[in-house]
Length: 152
Image (cartoon, rainbow, N blue to C red; front, side, top):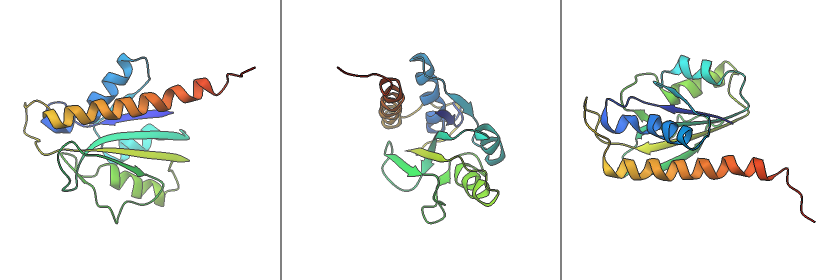
């Protein structure tokens, strides 16, 4: 499983995906970080079969809401507005779909943000959502290790 946290830690809530990746690495789970630009994401997941992307989104839901989407379905009807990157995760998925470069399994965790000013800290609601997403991904990464165990 390839995990990619996107965003910019210098822009308040936009740092949520990066913070998720950092916390996962502290737990011993491999996670990459990216700014979230479309072509960079497609390059990052190239050759991976199972990918999780975490980024801040603005959909109009309350700040700190955790959204989960199946990235194998085009997100045009969901319209995700990225916070500080122009061509972001939704556009990467649409382009990868057209180019037949989507991973076999692609899950998107979107953490609803509101504040994106330079130099501000992540809001408490988004911080709570980061903890929730880390917990969910950690639970998923433990399951494959248990699958090789047999019981008597």
